[in-house]
Image 1: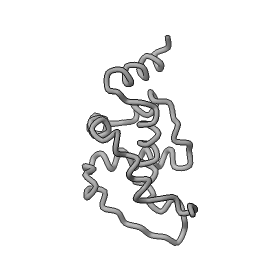
Image 2: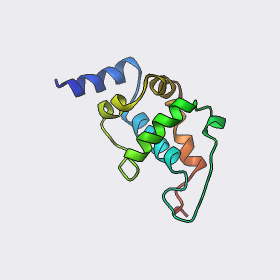
Image 3: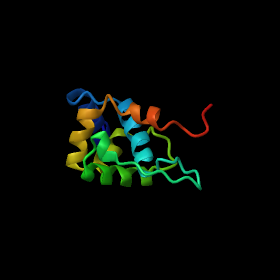
Length: 112
């Protein structure tokens, strides 16, 4: 088994983190980086701390959102885990089941 698969398997077994949690994290980080969804002419300021996200976590997620701005949210677990700071990892584990809410609050602008 490769080291990447070992890391992914350990995260899933020990922390009960599933691929969907990481996909939700990528989608949330994309919104945190750009809450307008890339639509020009729209300016939207969001105080992410009001959502319970600490400043250091916001910064880490903005970096992640910038890097994966237009990417599929299905990035390998080990790659994402390696880009998270210790504080973001802790926050992520505590909030993993609620990340989908960000997509509901900020739905895609092209949805009906």
